[in-house]
Amino acid sequence: MRGQNVPGERIAYWDNLKAVLIILVVLGHMLEKSGSECASAVYAMIYSFHMPLFVFVSGFFFKKGANWVTRLFLPYVLLQLIHGVCYALLGISKLDLSLTTPHWTLWYLLSMSAWYMIAGVMNLNRNNALPILLISILLAVLVGYDSSVGNYLSLSRTVSMFPWFLGGIIVREFHSRGLSSFLRPKGAFGIVIRLIAVAVSTVLLIYIYNASDRIEKKWLYYSYSYAKAGYTPLFRMGMMLTALIVGLSVMSIIPDRYIPGFTFLGRRTLAIYSFHALIISVMKQHDMIRDLNCVVIVISAVVMTYILAFIPIDRRNYPMDLSHKEKKK
Image (cartoon, rainbow, N blue to C red; front, side, top):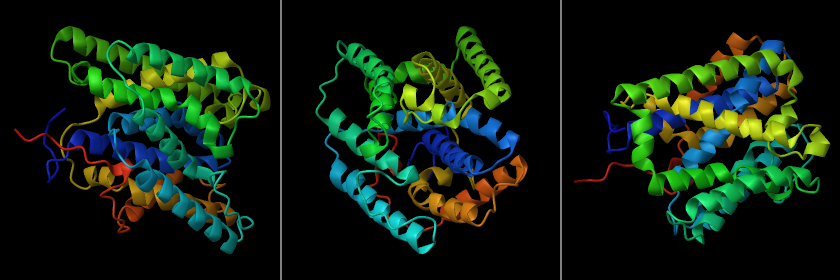
């Protein structure tokens, strides 16, 4: 996954992947506010894999010993207050400065704080990594039975998505060569395996698109209990398996070279992530999204992503933009 890299020796592959994912984040949130059947179908397809994959990438670049308080929790506090004040000033909601229940998209920062804190005290090795991962998967399924666990402190998502973060760490530490072999196969067998994964993913996404009218949005969030949202542990396990297959397929088709006008988005995820929800909320408040067709929403999401990418935010110590550079020889 070396390819042609961006200036400063960043690995272009990961910037390209993050660019695709942040566009999907913005697009997904815009589609969420639309009322069209097409929007709901595409929304279900995106939510079947994009956040698990984003969390996996975050885990892949986890750095033990990183100061999660200043790099994650304090940014969460700042953005939580900014969003609370802005929502109140814009008349979207009453003033809410609580830090215990994240505003809309900010759950990710709070959950990341917990993941960094937990992973920071773990002593993973080749012998215990798989058992610990399996335990985390079991907990991700079991937490859905507890109706008291939900958006408060982002507990439900923290538990149910931790396997993806942990999986990223484990792959980086112990199986990075195997991942590289899958993503860039050299032999015929490897290429066939990747083609099969892409084909299966395509079938899964088509099925989700056609079945979207029977899939409740709450089922895709990992934040509602089975009782409250009316779904089953089997569905959650199916979601996790789908996210794994589709996520690997998406990773396998991401180009590993620097793409002018695109790759840089992967270095600007902080600004995009921080402010896109405010803009979308304003658009929803003024009923600007509901009647848009899918094509217009996709174009709008891409344009919004590019505009927000130019907001000057210092990202040197921010975990969503962890430096992933080639090691100097």
